[in-house]
Amino acid sequence: MLAYPTAAVVIARSEGLPLAKVLGFSFAGYLLFGLGALPVGLLTDHIQARWVVRAGVLGVGLAMVAVGLAPVGNALAWALAALGSFAALYHPAGLGLISRTVRARGRALGLNGMCGNVGIAAAPVATELLAETYGWRSAYLVLGGLLLALGVAVAFLPIEEPAPGSQMRDEHHHDSRERFELFAVLMVGVMLAGFAYRANTVAQPAYYAERVKDVGYGTATSLAYAVGTVGQYAGGWLADRYDLRLLYLGFHALGVPFALAMSVLTGVPLVVAAAVYLFFSVGMQPIENSLVARFTPDRWRSTGYGIKFSVAFGVGALAVRAVEGFLEHYSLSGLFVAVAGIGTTIAAVAGWLAWKTRGRPIYNH
Image 1 (cartoon, rainbow, N blue to C red):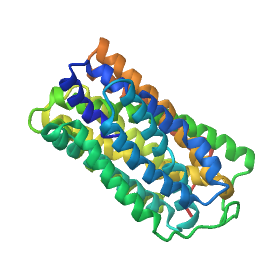
Image 2 (spheres, helix red, strand yellow):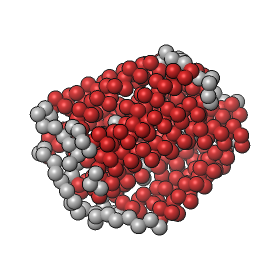
Image 3 (cartoon, rainbow, N blue to C red):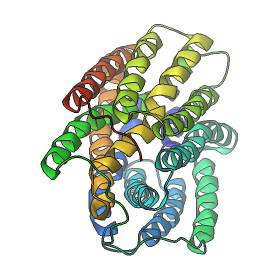
Image 4 (cartoon, one colour):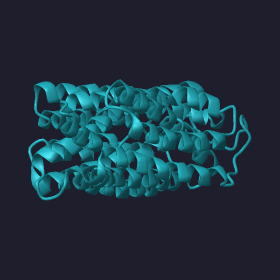
């Protein structure tokens, strides 16, 4: 899915279509990417998570090949929708599996996110190079082939996990009602962060194509997300050592000024500001995922992650329409002012969460 905003620049140019229309083809895919997470989480809490992970990787590979073969128009939108549906399988199953089986949970979640962000960082530059040299379809065919090969490898990978419904550890120090309230508050922050993340992801390649001349738009996107990958590792490392509430507040608050700077900068300074913003906005994810684990029982862990990613990615899909609207009526710079405003609101939510649990720090162990 994250290769598409970069491919969209080439599709719009080669097909003579408005960029807003081409970006709009991905709306259903992003929506299903999010909304599919909840039923997947419910299913995963009753079956072996490893089978869900395997099906997701293979399905994404097949769907990417379908995108590469689809005619531009409704067929492309349907192929992207299939891609989003299969991509929805991983997060609830994969993160639920990690959180229930790995003792150093924060570091493991950070490493998982870091590997994901290596893909996010590599996808734009790989897509740009393939699309500009051989056509945008080649990018999806090559990446889809690689995912299919990975899916075959994962299918034979031995994965140990507890039986569905078993309880490995449930070390929470909150009663069930308060746990539900804290989870609900956290979901408000997740919803806002999901919108900001998707808006930023969809807009960055086009924004760099407009404002950065020193490097290609795909390369600029990849460089910024590479720093976000470092943020994932840092966030996971910190999550195993310090109060999760204060880390969540700090990461969101520190990202705000850099999102605001993105609205006025150009060239290399813009890429630097975007990189620092992504360090914090992406780096907070293992902290956020650790909080989800602390606020959900082990037996419903994948369901908890399913709710989280349905909220984050489902609402985040609306950002595709928001970016489309900005492109039709306003400049993209205004979008990053809005992203900074959303970040400020998330910091306020995180502050309320810390106040609600004052005197009771929340750790990953």
